[in-house]
Amino acid sequence: MPKKPEQPINSAWTVTLLPLAGLLVLDSLVAYIVPKISVSTSTVFTQLTPVRFHEIIALALVTALTVIYLAYLRTKFYFSTRWLIAAVTYNFFLLFVKFIISVNEFSSQSAKTFNALLYTAFLISLLYILAFGVLYLFFDGKILNKSLHKALIVSAEGKILLAIGLFVFATIARLLIFRLPLFSNTTAASYLSGVFQANTALLSALLFIMIFAAVEAYAQVRRWVDLKYFFVSGVALMLIYHLTWAIFVYRSY
Image (cartoon, rainbow, N blue to C red; front, side, top):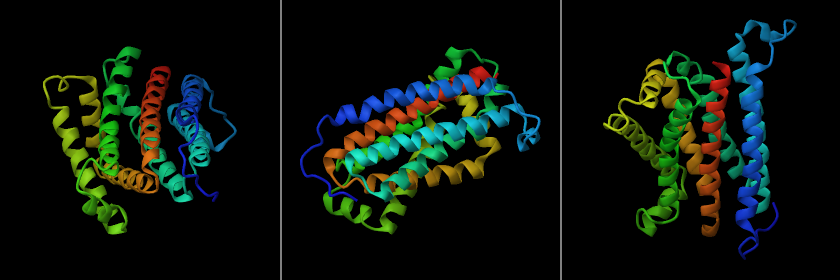
């Protein structure tokens, strides 16, 4: 791996955000076009329903675009291969949850207008962003003292403890936030309840893997100055995924 320069990267925000704009356009096109692709009668996909076929194609394409973006980011910021593996892992499982596990759940919801889908997607994205933001504050040094902070991030045991703590926090936040008067009667609350009731064990396992991979990705950002770029790119990816999901579900149903 090339030696990482000590000075700040020139035009770091341009390096981070400009490709994200391109990714937003491409992911939106995938979500718009894929649901209308016909299922071939001469392939293995004939065993799948059209919606499941489209889910798999969308997942593959959006994941591929995400990997390209993350590989680009790794090159520009001199991140390690371990960072790339960890970042790809949590992003892939987030996409897996959105496009494979949760798409069909919204078909049972009464409100399927694009505005309703977009509002639901935005509310759900806030849970991911909340957990990701807590990790950013931790690795930025705003949570815990320096000695305890260092002890947690330099060992596998410390990272596991951090992941467990964040998993518990995210679970409690999910249960409490969507029981508040402002959110309890929203489509997002019904959607979350339905998804978790049908897939509790699987979703819990996937969420823990996502959290642990995100912890590892943050731990691989060696320079403090680069944390904010990783955080912003991570948040932007989460928003892009949920917008893509909303377009995909609207076009599918």
